Image (cartoon, rainbow, N blue to C red; front, side, top):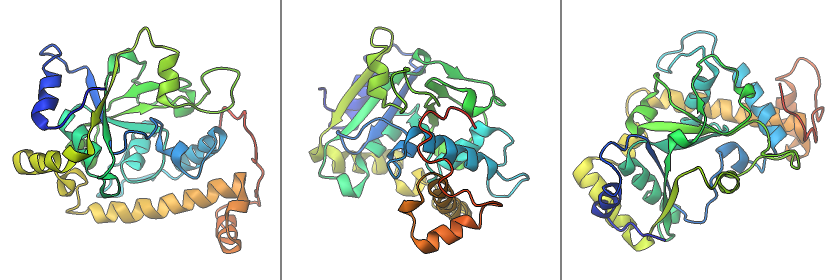
Length: 284
């Protein structure tokens, strides 16, 4: 596996492609062994049907009117993007068009500084494109790439874009979702994909180069100044509410008695465990 030990080596790798390589997308992960799967499937060990229920309730929580400083949108996909970039689990997986941003994410996590990181490279044109603003998300049954004209501050600083996981399994033999490796194994002849190692011994050096030369650091990447604290507070509350609602409907045994009381207050009728083990759920 090719290793990236410095920004110059990353640029050398990039220069192996044609000059106009705007089709390339990059993702950095601070642990080489982590899977490539959206946050909703790394959250509380959610099954696929629980992710569908979580997304249904998340879309119902979309503000019906502008709430500055948050980006207002009437489109489901843009609301999902805003939630993803503010810590609410979704079936989106972050990518970027800037290799330096991906390098930052492959190095910065303090808890994994002593672990090798990974830099992934793909061609976003190898995937179906989610390109209709007002399409219903649940209709997207296969993995697709998403770009948008309307970006929130974090997306703008991170040159962000996304993969949207399909709402359906890859095949009829399963009721669950999948990671990107399984998707690629079924499409290996038609998809370009590279995985490069970021050795743990090089992480601090790369982070220093990114900060000193390119002003890429956590203050800028995560937009910590301005009114961002308002967004953080709003989406933190939303994340906790959705957790209670999803588990109350699907597996309330994961909640404490007090949490079940709070969760019950979010519904007009008592729906505790009504949707438990609905493993073939495909719509909402």
